[in-house]
Image 1 (cartoon, rainbow over the protein chains, first blue to last red):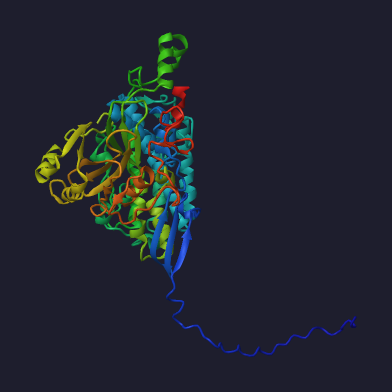
Image 2 (image 1 turned 120 degrees about the horizontal axis):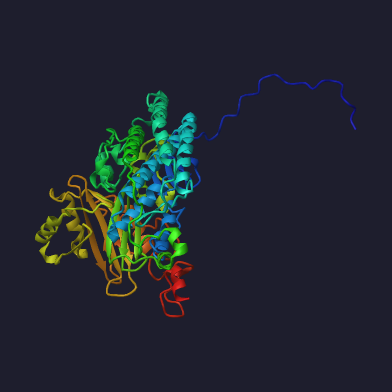
Length: 419
Length: 180
C-alpha cells in the first residue's frame, strides 16, 4: 500500500507535441471517387409503407436507384378467382387503404360494366359523394405526411384534424372508418343515415377555409418552395410514355382526368375543373392536389343538392339482397337472400376493363369471365404501381434529401402497389 | 354515363386501318361493352405496336396495363393483353396475343417504356416470358421464389400443385365448399 498522497493531481497544461506525420497520407481524391450504396426501407418512414429503394450515391447525388416492391403482397388477384363478385369488395378496401371508398366504387363499377347493370339515380349520386370524400381524405393524408417528411410538422396536425371529421362522416355512412366495404353490385350496402347530408354539408362549408390556411402555410413559404420547386421534374412526354396518371401526370400539364374523358356515374353533369401544372416538379404536383380538393368540394356541393329520393338498389332479386324485413317473413325473399349470399350470380362470358379516376390516378379493373360466379382472372391496374416507375427518372442526378420529397410527391400507397 | 362508362363510339376504323397495314396477320377483332380487342400474331406485334403509337389516326401514346391469363386446358397456355390509350384521340384498344405452351411474348418496352414494370409483374405472377425485355426480374414475389402464383395450377392454400387426389384442379382452394 502506498501512502495516500496529499498533493492534488497535477495537470500538465503544456501543449501536446504535434502529431506524427502520417507516413502514407491518403491521396486527396481517393474518397471522392467512391460510390456508396444506401438502402432505404422497407421500413423508412418517408416511404409511407413498405417500399425499399437501393440508392447508389456519389457524395449526396443519386447516381442510380432500384426500387423493390412486393413487401405487402397478399395475392388479392388470386383470391378474387375463388370468390363471388360481392365477396371481393372487402379486399378492395385494403388496396388503396387511404381511399377505400373510391377503390370500392372502382371495383363495383367494373363488375357492373361486365354485367351491363345501370344503377339507380340515388345510388349514382351517393357513389359520387363517396368518391369525392375519399379523394379529399387521401389528398389530406398526402399533404400532411408529405409536408411532415420535409420538416413542416404544423400542416400534419391541421390535415389530420380535418381527416378526423371525414372519418366520422365515413363511419356514420358505412360503419367502418377504414374498411368501408360500402357498395354492392347493383347498389349499396345500406342507404345513407339520417342527418348524414348535414354532416357532409357542414364539412363542405368549413373545409375551404382550412384549405386556404394550408395554402397560406405552404404555397408562399420560402422553405417549402426551396425544397419542392424544380425538384423531381419529369417531362410530359416521359410521364405519358411511363403511363403515369392522376395528379402526377396533371402536374406535367396534361389535363387527363378519367372523370372528364370517360365520365362514369354521370360525372359529365357535374361542374368542376381539372387543375394542371406546368413544370412537372414536386411543387406543381402539390398545387394540383391542393386545387383538386377544392374541386372535390364543388362536386360534393352539387351532389348534395341533387341527391334524389328513390331506391338505392336495382330491382333484380338475382343480384341484390332483398329487404331484411321481407327475408324474415317471406319464403321467396329468404330463398333469394340465401342464393345471392351462398351462390352469388354468374357474369356473362367476356372480358372488360373499366377505369375510374381514383385519388392516385387511373384505377382500372380488368375482369375476364368464363360465365361463372367468380372472375376467371381479375387484374388491378393500380395507379401507384405504374407511377412508381418514374422514380428513377425523377430522382437521378438529384440529391438524396430531394428523394424524400419525390417519394412524397408521387404519393404511392403500397397496399395498392403490391396488392 | 348512368353508371360505368361504355364507349359509345369504339374506334372500329382502327381495326380496318390495322387490317390494311398488316394484311398477312389475318387479324381478329372482338367487341364487347364498347371495347375492341385485336388479336395479333407474335411476330408482327411489335411492328403493329409501333404503328399504333406513331400513326396520327391511332396515336396510342399511353400504355395502361398488361395482363396475362393462364389456361390449364386448350390449345393456348396464355393470353397476354396490353391495354393502350390515346390521350389525343381519347380512345382505347386492347392488343391480345395468344401463346401456345413454350412460346414467349415479345416485349413492348421498346414502344412504350411504361410496360416495363407491368410486363415484369405478369412474368412474375403468371409466368409469361417476354423476349426483348430489358430487365425481366421478379417484381412482386421474392427473387428466389420458384413459382408463378397466378397460374391456374397454383393452389391458393398451400403452393404449387397440379391436381389433387380427386383429379380436379386444386386451385382455387376457396371453391372446396362446392365439393364438400
